Amino acid sequence: MTTPSRLPEPYGPSSGANLADILERVLDKGVVIAGDIRINLLDIELLTIKLRLVVASVDKAKEMGIDWWESDPALSSRARRDELARENAELRERLARLEELELEQGRARKEHARREGARREEAP
Amino acid sequence: MSGLRYVYAVCRPLGAPLQAQLTGVAGAPAKPLHHHGLVAVVSEVPERDFGEEPLRAHLEDLDWLAATARAHQGVIDALTVVTTPLPLRLATVFRDDSGVRSMIEAREDHFRETLDRLEGRVEWGVKIYAEPEQPERAARPAPKAASGRDYLRQRRQQTRASEDMWQKAEAFATRLHEELADFAEDSRLHAPQNPALSGAAGRNVLNAAYLVPRRGSEEFVELVDRAKDDVPGLRVELTGPWAAYSFAGEAPEEEA
Image (cartoon, rainbow over the protein chains, first blue to last red):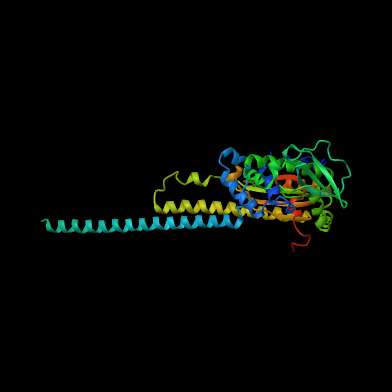
């Protein structure tokens, strides 16, 4: 659908593009000129954020495929780092719990053995 | 007449006439407005939809926005067939023809410079998606780790596999981008699209635009096609030819 091996002649419409590709260009690229009808550029940026909130239905979201405004590579790699950090913490916690458990079990075993030994000594 | 003027693009006078019934936003015909040797392609649109307040409200309506964006792009596409347009951002609206004329006068030098720079060139979009081979998340709850050590080992393997995948994807994207940028006259890296919203499988690791002379387009498309099956787990998508959206908005020497 989106991989046209369409040759450049004749210049047909870029129909292989999805809505996300189109919005990315018509909203975000192109020549910016303040017309008589003032749409604050900030409004347009806000609009893109609102869009994300408005995208309620899955179908719509699929069709849109947009969010160039937030998927800054820096942000997404930070998200990955955050996930690693969280996982790391989770693992440390788990390890600590296991070590504690093992320690407890070891102590219990020793205690048990000591009692057993004592009982055997007491016995004739 | 209470109609406003919606401007799609600025270009040189057209060698060939626009297609007879070129329909733009709001179902209105798109027509050339000549001034100072340049052409603004314009539709008359109703104030009730394109006045400041209604326009702002409409822009938050996804269906309206989608339809308007497609109509805008439709006109730009038709122009790209016959000329090299400078596409304007969606919803650039003036009160009347004289507003459009003053806008042209105020910027004609810059328009001419940019039109010269882009003459005979089109934009191609290339995206690369990385598709993780084994769904990591599904593997997590699967076989309950027998011990803490097993658990740690499993996690380490998963992390390593996914790191390898990203490294591979990154290396491939870098290589392809270098090759394409080398061939193209200019290139732009755009922020990747989010997989959660696009519904496209995999993570978008490259979202780039390339400025290519029409003559070189066929070769460019072949370059992309050839790269397509290079690495398993990676998908290359090509869109275009677009008007040079990603290269129209800046001063010529802005990027080093």
